[in-house]
Image (cartoon, rainbow, N blue to C red):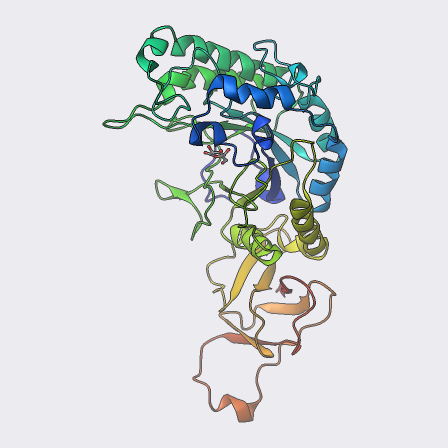
Length: 429
Ligand code: GLC
């Protein structure tokens, strides 16, 4: 894939593996109404303390999470070591605001990393640049305390520099104490605008942080949210599907869409906007057809489980992936001469020279592939390896058709195969 901008981190495995699990887990799983609840509802530190005192994930078995992810066909995971609320999942030496000091009374990160590694998933760490709990973090216009009557006085005692030191120290721990880290996901920068105070690279000391990251884990894949123009490895569109391969300065880049099941990243009890299995499978396919990765999120409950809605979807994805992962792993956008037919998505494996035709709406018997004539050696349904004939429409029918150049016509069964999205595997000559 020579036409893609090359970057310092090792993305070779990443652009082949394509599918990962995002995990948002923290104190916000208890209010269970969005991981931004502290900010949305402007909850004070002392009121939010309730969740710290009650955080007791007694059913936490990271082996089950890792199995669910592996079974869904996911090849890597990224977990929130700390989200914007400031609570840390691991036994950091730099704050008391951590899992071992809650009723959980243990480091929750190490066993998770071990469990996912045991299932052969690569390890990604999400770490929030934002911190609505740390006493040195200068209150800005995004902060949960933004409307505090004494904001100015509070800020006089705060030092963003000392916060940056804390941030760097924690990142050093994360990149030193947990073995090889494959992905590092900082979140996020929101530079000041006229009339609005935010934070960016000067506040995080991003350049210095960047140098440390590359020194400690030279191969790590770094996301693009440090507010640095260069140095990142992956673009991270969030909660929407790009219409095309993402480009920067007219050059294709490595990219990964991150998506939720229902809208919130943290466990949300009452959200009704859960995506269907169909939508999720199509989302994965659509992403790979544009040369991207999909990072799909689960927000575990406060008791430490994936809830039944999440497991349902992961199982469904696994069921589809079991028979169709060949059209995902190692695949990318199809070469431009192969035009995507109506209601379809194409992916392509350059190593095996096979095209994968994902049929999103099952047509009646004939599927016309413009530009494919003479290029396909054999075609089969991927779910059951049954042959798909390439005989075209009969002469007596063809009279009604406008003649098109280079069309290959597949003959499909009348009934859609009993899978979420059927795939035709095309062996190119
Ligand atoms: C965001 C949000 C957030 C979530 C994330 C995932 O910017 O602040 O809560 O963690 O992106 O991409």
